[in-house]
Image (cartoon, rainbow over all chains, first blue to last red; front, side):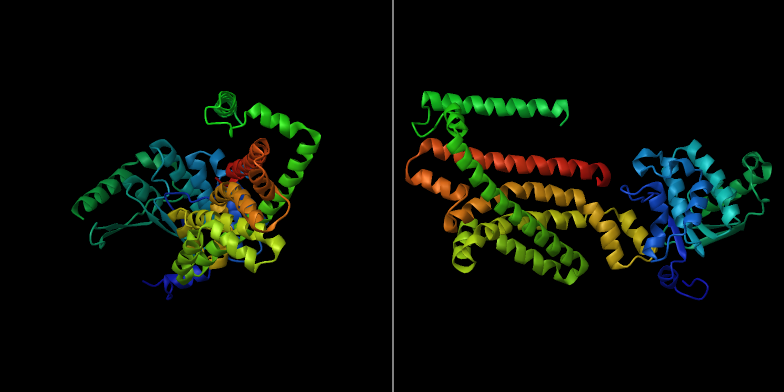
Length: 188
Length: 247
């Protein structure tokens, strides 16, 4: 696999890959702010204070900048993980089921927030998910993969207008796309 | 200490003290078992108290030096095993072999090979080092897979991963090791003193045994035990404080 003509390792070496996992992987001894600053330290760059301020506000945690992860809810921790992933303005943002461990209500709220964050940052994002409505709501393109071996089975363009608001979740077009993807998954 | 945790500790101390006193008073184990009250009365006279305090300070200083050096060496060896993985198995074997030598034999060899005043510190170092090595190695390997993946994907160097992830993660385990090693360092210092020193709890113990000074023997043993318990408790407080942030 190559990304923009280079292997993924080159993207990592140049600190152009941002990532958030299902497990937030925050460092419990650091504050919210220090966790978001971490990529700057690992890339041996001066911390961009304004960028950290901007991201802390973007994910709605400006008032919790000094809090430690144990003081936050599951949803707040995932928002910190996403802010950390965005810190260095990566070329690719990889989100590996970032909301997979959250309850349905929190998950829906965070999907709406993620869409807003993405709209603000406009970074090419690869989101791995098992939730069809999440994929339809967030993506421009959904790739359905088979289980074993992992092969691309379907490639569906999502042409819903942006920015997408909560109301779109109950629109007929949204449901039609969800049904189409459900059938594709069943067949995969 | 929380109220719920303090209760059993105080209860245990009281039961131990009571049993000690009763066994001594009733001569249940013969006349060589001095009652606790007699031992305390002996230690509370100004001359004996000063003697025990001076010996405890001497042994405590040696144990502390040994604990610091041993802990540093144990941590450094464990770090080498993490930073240079091909050294891991060799260092593990080396540390196990060193730990397998009876401490009394180590003390005898040290008495012949290191400067006289240095023997208690060297023995205390060896007694403490292995525990901290094992605790450090376990702590440095205890990071979560997600955290390791994150550092890898963010392009962290091995040094940055060690400094910013492994060491902070390992701190509670390392301090557990240091706390457990503290009583061993005290024992190591006392054994080292047997072979080389003229002051400290070790020589006092030997002198009491040779002169059949039973109460003095018990008083020295009690002083040594209190020294170990104090070190363990102090390091426990430090461990609790570190655990609040890094645990």
